[in-house]
Length: 418
Image 1: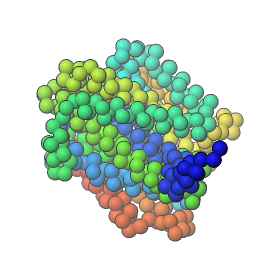
Image 2: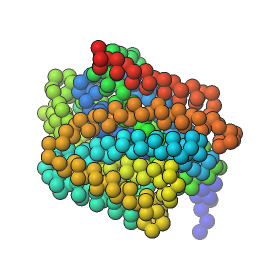
Image 3: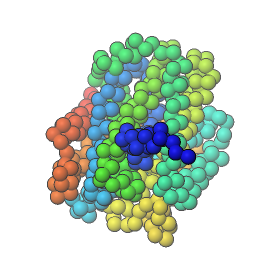
Image 4: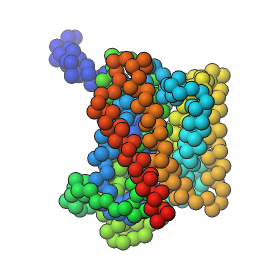
């Protein structure tokens, strides 16, 4: 039977564009959402619990900065067909690249520890011992990559991304003062004390993390997105930047409306979840805890993957989820090694989980300018990018991000010695 209405729909340019976007969608949304990992959620929770609505203004500039940085990543990957670590090696040489990768490896391992400590904390909220939760989580993360292809792994990651909606619901259930929240978004309130600057660096470090620049570029390369679909990949990157900051906004709002407003002291996400029960209801508490578990497990799979990508690319080893162990032994060995070592360390009694979670985000903020500078050098190189080099606007936003983070880092050092 002939259905003219369906023919018209399928031939409609808007519908076709939407279908192409769905096929390209993934790297931008996934990379952005992993920024709201265990360390990120802890940082945002403490930001709301300790500073109320005062830091909400940061999300506006961070949306623009993250969107530009993610767009740069997908553009570099699609145009060059290479990962960021590979391009850095070609730009500055193997010796300097090796030193950069060692620094990033150490910092990223701190992030991996943060994710598994997040699993331990969230499992504890539901009464599951870490001795059980951590090995199960490690096995899941390992099997996901070893047994899957890029397409299957991406589908799982997209499903995990959708579960972040639980934080938006939890934020609404907390019944915040929307008027005061809106005012705080458009009216910056800046303090120059150590705690405020440290928190600011932590928020920037968790929203725009160094590892994400490597992961997003490697993922678009492995996915094989063509140059003709570049604009759809850009949209994916920008959409991801917006969504991740909306979720973070609701985390801060939920903790402000309940914990900060009532003057409750919290030390970790478990305390936050417990505090939400009498203040916002049991459902808000459960949603918050489930969101944290999802975020921790999600990031515990991706962060070691990101590390394996850029280490192998920088040293010229085969890398890729779709490649088996025989094809990419260093890639798979590094991925497994990071997971196992993280689990062993987090299982050590009396490990300061909150300190690991929080400081890993501050480390991200301190390392961010160096990676951004290298990205800017490469993306403005016509030998690499041709006609797709950065515009003056994008250069301005990226340079402003570098300058601001460096000033915050200097400010932190100064306040620590005052």
